Image (cartoon, rainbow, N blue to C red; front, side, top):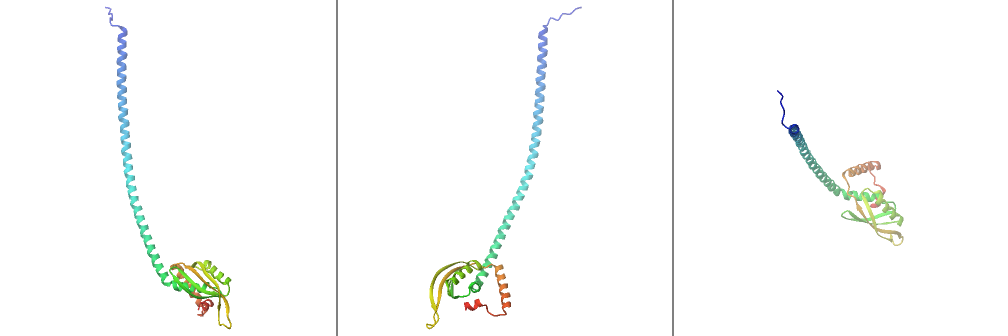
Length: 216
């Protein structure tokens, strides 16, 4: 017996294509959801790992900050100790300053220059004396400004002609007054100076130097 399909042929194919299309959409949606879930899980894992790394780094940074703070504290303590040491050296230098000053003036006074006296006011000293000529005064200023490790910045206050000696045999001289600054002696320099003085005294055999005789 022959069967005749009375359903529209085209309508059946359209329904089949529509069903296939819907199935494809559902499959694509499922795949998309799966991809989203997979990527989300991967991102969540990566974020968790990064957070762990950040926590480790933060711990290391905190520890480093603590070390830096301790180093800064140690530096402050070292600076405070240096300041105390410098204060002690300054006090030691101030105690010995008159000795250094007198000795240095004697050392730097050239031949033909005679000192009458000096007055100290803080770190400045006024020196009065007389010389055989103005060239001797200039030489004294040069010595005080460049050759002296203890004295600095000499300023000539007054220079004038004068006369010394008895009336029957007067001697023309140049009277002068100058001001010179004192460098605060350091402990190391003081020790070197004392050692040099001791060596010089031994070499002189205990006799006074010509400069000391002039100052007297």
